[in-house]
Image (cartoon, rainbow, N blue to C red):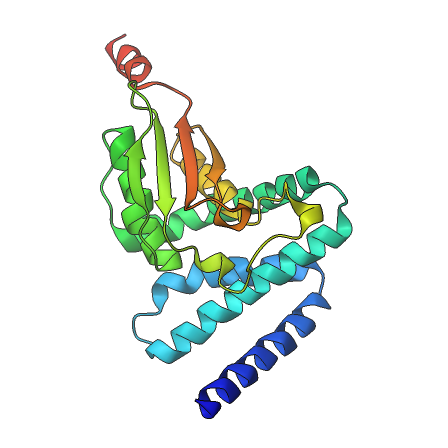
Length: 221
């Protein structure tokens, strides 16, 4: 029991040292690390599992340092959220080529297929988790991705009281939006629920802006 507690204490110290080093760097550098990591995530099957775990842990710590730095640079949560979304968008429009090349997915015929690919293939490939998918409306253009586990918040217990409006993982919304745009799908992406804010699950909402019937109508013209 004592050895277990000592091991946990040493692990916490290592994490704190890494965070201390990362927080000394500007977010322009950390976002470069994030882009590099996400671009290489799907290339890791040949690596040892332990190395992959360390790499993912470093990515999560780097993202935490990025958010911490943005909170220092911007007083308003809305500005931090917007900045994370823009950064995610920039990653998404580049990441789509890697995703399409490595996943070998076929062209989706509907919004529901697209949502399933995002959850079952993209999230699994880059974050190691598979959200559940549900359609939120009768027209079939609004979907929810529900995550029981969000690896980006592994080292975050809760948001500070003064940062209650912060969308800590808003980068994910930008990534999804940017990637969809590159395959000619306009969408609004936002967090609907967040465990860091006391919700039971983490839920990302995706609204495709052009309705399926509009697409069929255009093809028939």
